[in-house]
Image 1 (cartoon, rainbow, N blue to C red):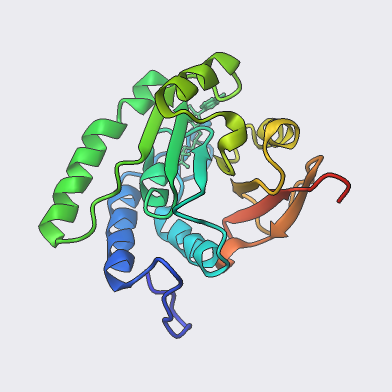
Image 2: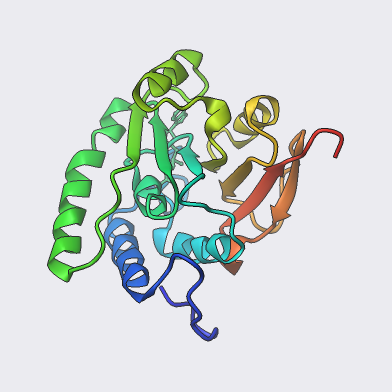
Length: 220
Ligand SMILES: C[S@@+](CC[C@H](N)C(=O)[O-])C[C@H]1O[C@@H](n2cnc3c(N)ncnc32)[C@H](O)[C@@H]1O
C-alpha cells in the first residue's frame, strides 16, 4: 500500500503493520470486484487498493478520528469499504437495499479474517454495523438508532460509489451536521456541484477515483 514515488512517512494511525493489513484487505476484496469493467449494471465495487491511497490523505489531514468519526456507506454491498474504514473510525455503518448482496458480507469477512489471522495482521475492530434497507428510508434510521444509538445527524463521514450521489448530497445538505464530510467515488476531475456542500479535496490521495465534499457551515 505504500505509495510509489513518495518517501514513506506513515500518517497518524497507519504504522507498518496496519499498512500491511490494509494491503491484504485491498488484495482480498479486489480479487472479487463486481462490475469493474464497462457497463455492468448499477453495482460496482470500490477499488480498495486505490481507496487505501485515499485513506492515507484523510489520515494525513486529520479528517478521521477513531474517537469521533461515524462513517456511513449509503450503499454498502458486501461491506468491503466498511471493513477497511473500521480501523480509522469510531463506528462503521453500512446500508444496503439488496438482501442478497448484503448476505455476501458474512462469509466474505470470515474468509478475510482467516487470511488476516494466518498473516499475523490486525483484525478489524468490532465497530461494523450493516443494515438491510434503503438509506433514503426514515424507518431504516430508526433501526440503526435502536441498534447503535446513532442518528443520521451523528454520522459525519458519508460515502457512495456514484450511486444516488446527488440525492444523498441533498439529504446530507439538509440533515447532516455542519462540517460533515461526503466522499464520492467516481469523480476526481469534473466534479458535480451540490447545494450546501463545498469541494474540500478534488482528488483524494491523488488516486483519480474520489472527491471529498464538506457541508458548509451556516452563513458560510
Ligand atoms: C456501486 S455499488 C457500491 C458498493 C460498495 N459501496 C462499494 O463501493 O464497493 C452501490 C450499491 O448501493 C446499493 N443501493 C442502491 N440504492 C440504494 C439505497 N437507496 N439504499 C441502500 N443501498 C442502495 C446497490 O444495491 C449496490 O449494492
